[in-house]
Image 1: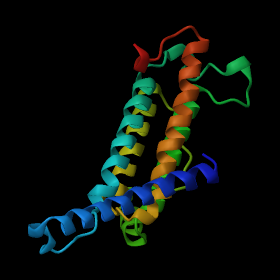
Image 2: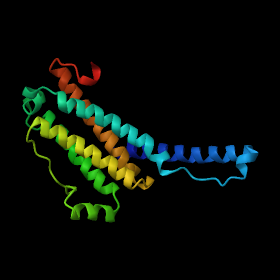
Image 3: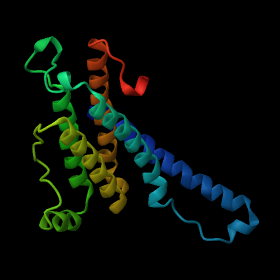
Image 4: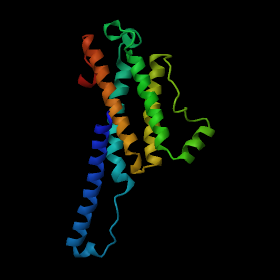
Length: 192
């Protein structure tokens, strides 16, 4: 996702949050009972729920492809046999790498340091290597779980650029994987 698209998406989220706050104000002003209640700003849940739903959607689709892509093509197929183009396994591992990186940026410094001290978080620059199809599926699942956990433990809207990156990056590469299916005369699991 380029910077302009990312900025546009972030603006949409902020405008929606602002609109929500104004709507809450108007409702409170128009209702005599509610006008006496203290107005509250939207909760972190209001901001993160739609983001987490979108992340879960792309996770489900990417994991379905990771588990379903044919074994003989998983690490062997490259469009036009071009060695500069990633295999399906490399795309999936790249998604996992980027998810882990985004999760590390979303966490607070204290959260990140605590997890790293416990040996539970891969370095944000860690490269995922292909071991097997099953291992790749597990790495992809774990990377999305890391993103969700990071957002839930630090729902600061200042991290929206990382939230949106996970969604757009995953969707972009999901499109690559669907193309790999179609070029090989196969139907992706999400279209069956």
